[in-house]
Image (cartoon, rainbow, N blue to C red; front, side, top):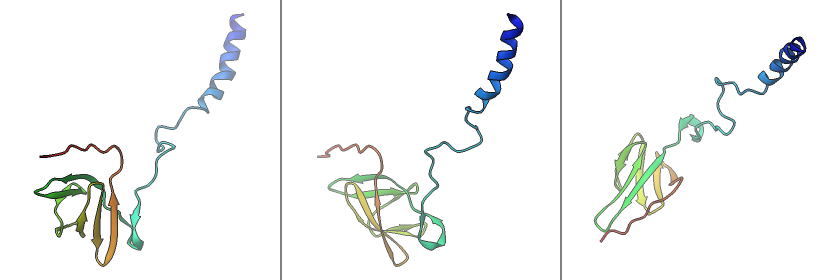
Length: 107
C-alpha cells in the first residue's frame, strides 16, 4: 500500500506543478502603461482633483497644478470635478479620475 501511494504521488505532483502560476510573470489582468502619441512617452496620470470656491488643483504625475500651470510637458487648461483638460505641446488631452471618487462639499 505504501509503495502504491508513493508511485501515485510521484506521478501526480508533476501534473500539479503545471497549474502553478509563474511568480516571475505579470498577473493575468496586467496591462502595460498606456502611451501618449507616437513618441512612446507614458501618458500622464491624474491622481487627485481638489475643487473649492477659492481654488482648483489637479495632481498629475505627483505634481499639484492649477489651471495654466505646467510640469513635465503637461499644461493644465481646465479643471473640473472629475476630469482635467490639458495639453502636451499642441495636442489636447482629457485626463479622467479612475477609481472611487470622494466628494465633500466645502463651505
